[in-house]
Image (tube, rainbow, N blue to C red; front, side, top):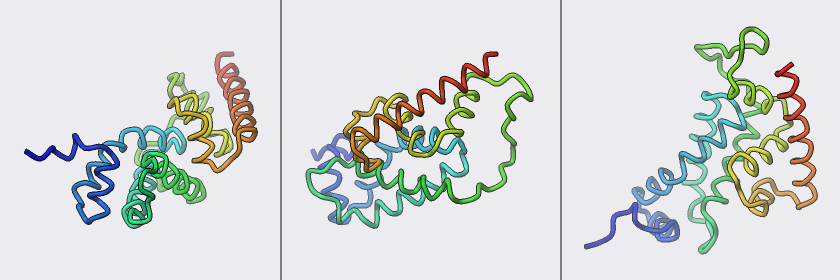
Length: 174
């Protein structure tokens, strides 16, 4: 009996997908999609942009799968594509949502809303660094690769992001 696609490793699924097995690629995406969604939403703080970014990134990943290096880390490769699409998503005006987000000070915000507001105020590279390292628990070397920065630059992004988040969240308590 042949193992089902969900029991195969990422490497095995990549090999099958590169050979033209569309189901293998879908299995790869399903395996990584929940974490991608979490990260993209935390970066963009917008469900509409999140969907657009993921749609674009997954299409790019499918188109570029044949160029994926054997033995490489699929998740890091996919995160890099998603990050690049996030940069474009930040530069693109958001569609008008059906439900407006609550404005700070208009009503009592939940902790999640307060963190979202504080995150969106950060520069994108700082936001991505703190979301991936502190929020998602990524290894720093992986985040350096995703952002294309050296360790000192990542340290600076994290230092500034953490300081600004602390300041923004402590102001909200006053």
